[in-house]
Image 1 (cartoon, rainbow, N blue to C red):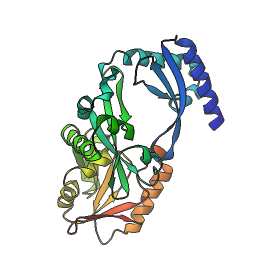
Image 2 (image 1 turned 30 degrees about the vertical axis):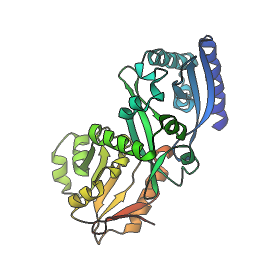
Image 3 (image 1 turned 120 degrees about the vertical axis):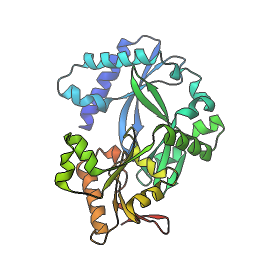
Image 4 (image 1 turned 180 degrees about the vertical axis):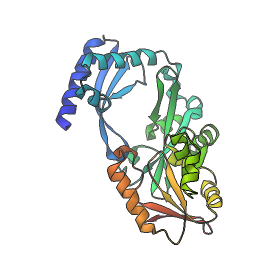
Length: 298
């Protein structure tokens, strides 16, 4: 599979290089992603621009294997590049000015141990055995949303510290992307599109915590007083199952729940159901409400 992707990447790079004139530089880089995953990034940079879109060959490979032509893939990429050239957010000086980018700052939680090398190059805030990293989110209705991970070199350029970055990002997210703590029955009912579903099953005291966008929602655990807000909802101590970087599952701590079994469940989901980039942790957590302590369950 690795050799097939590398061969496809080379074909795609050559095709894009032939399409573009000297106004653009087309380059391929192995890009570090979450949890040590590496993807083949193809960057198409207009000369004179400091920000450029990057496309990952892996995202197009399955379609190519299924019969989609290389020319059609090239066409979809070049259409995106054409649109992105006109977006004011991507002006050359935009990312150089913190006053311009701070309103677009967001965070996401990642696994500290799995991203040990990656975290050396990016500012982060520790949260138990996890880390929050920062992104500048770029939104445009024509081409969708994208994000640029904030690196150490950026905060040096901006002249800001990590606390300022954290405070601004958290303020943005709490205002624009508030938390959503929803009973799992309500979620199942919405999926089934019939409210009587919850009546058939009966009450289940299990909740999903995410954000309004349902993207990178696990970071809502870091919102102000969030752990205690959940404790009030759960009427005391509770468990957290990190189902992915996008959401976590909350359930009250009861004598009939075996804590180590919850960690086994987390591991099973990680190994069978999740994209490696979306894994948050390999164990469950418990929150002791009286002591205000969050700790892993080994």
